[in-house]
Length: 196
Image (cartoon, rainbow, N blue to C red; front, side, top):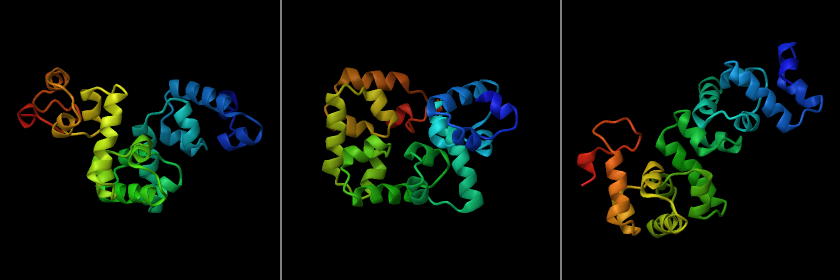
């Protein structure tokens, strides 16, 4: 497949010739190892499913969506309809209100707060989408029961106060606090002095 692309065929032609997802992903992984960016992969016809299978990150796929956002005016709701994940939509730079609107569409379709969370929506987006505080808090309780660490929960948008309410103990929260540094760029959005 990678040889076909190198010979001038595009991904759509490879797909039409009968290449399966596993073959497309393997070929794309080889091209990625040679430095092919997600935006370039999209230009030669690879889709987001093939890019995910080849190991491109949500941030890399978000760059593709960002181009569609600027060039074609694709909204977050439209991106969701096109099959982009919330992490990819977030990475494309959509503002919080647009992500919340996309999450509210998920709610309107009858999906639970847990199902919306499993799709990739964060707690604040779930609340803005109209899920109740109790529904969102229940998601964290379920995740804790399933073994989600305080550090991982915080990385996915749960605040320290929410972690305490969900029953994380001092040792678990302490592990999170030990990982925080003043302006460490960790993406937690929290400084050590804000944790107390």
